Image (cartoon, rainbow, N blue to C red; front, side, top):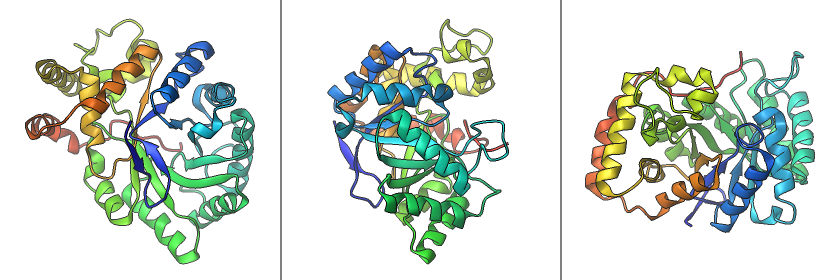
Length: 324
């Protein structure tokens, strides 16, 4: 396993991270625990979750699975998206974040979070309030580092500027949708992150399975695929994304790789990327993604992937989560 620094911090994270939004939903507790333990045995030390994944079941399962193993893990979670029906059950206010941190600590059975991330930009809460709250959490020892998620370039730069001015702890990462099917971060966000020493943590690196080549038509989805179990995902299926998935699959087959491993290897090689979050609902899926670590990307393969995905630098983001 390769390890990289997360932003301008001393924290080392595995180049491949484990995403856990399926735990407690598409993967039951027993399978989720097997996946976590296999990931740790394979050298993965970065686990990413959130307070809302599977109705908070993801955090609870992780907390139980890490019994006796907490010290082996860089544990990341998030708060800020809608958690309940009340007016203060969402966003990045001091009250909401403090409550959600305590509940996450309880479910995760730990007394600190390695990376606490704001799940999305909150236009209704002053950034200074959010950043001061996060700084207090770091000073208390309950949080070690802080990161953003779904922040666009100007939002992240504004937050860094306030932290610099006020002497607050700075964001060291921004977790965003980034893949061959979504290269929009390359336009503004990644150049800014390179300049400011902030890492990119891509989610949806396989575009929800589209880059595995499993989809052949928008109205013909494989059984048990994400589009089958989550009908809302079908909005991402169109001729452009399906054609890209098929092209990536053909190139990977010609090179002797799986399309998922090749797609992840390409992403790991991008500037500012420290760790790529991959989800799994079976151990064999994780094992296939781990093969990305052994792929040497030569210039010809990189150029071919760059060319076929070039149109995805423009237009809409593949996924972008905001407060309603």
